[in-house]
Image 1 (tube, rainbow, N blue to C red):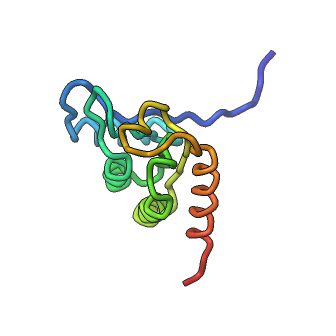
Image 2 (image 1 turned 120 degrees about the vertical axis):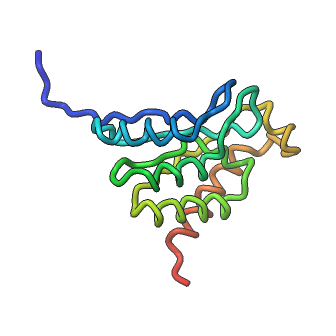
Length: 143
């Protein structure tokens, strides 16, 4: 059985490694992925990790500057550990400088991270839901 289904493909940028990360490699991978027709480039948020991990907003902004059509996403921003207005502002800025190519994925993250950030994990689901609502309000409000 054959199918005419077209599934868009995305890939991860080299933004996290136990070894040093060469910025030229990020540029090369981003440009090559775009040339090959990948739809999205993704990074993760890992502020506290055993590996070097670039900040998602910074590396995606760099990727936006060296590409023209591929969409740029973070999967996932650990929303209960960050202020949602800062997240909304960063992603809105990325969306502006990339001409509408930003994608935001949010999630709860790993439980052990909460104590490292001195944040209680007790109400993390509620914090995630409230954060999403604040981001939506920030993006839709008229000033």
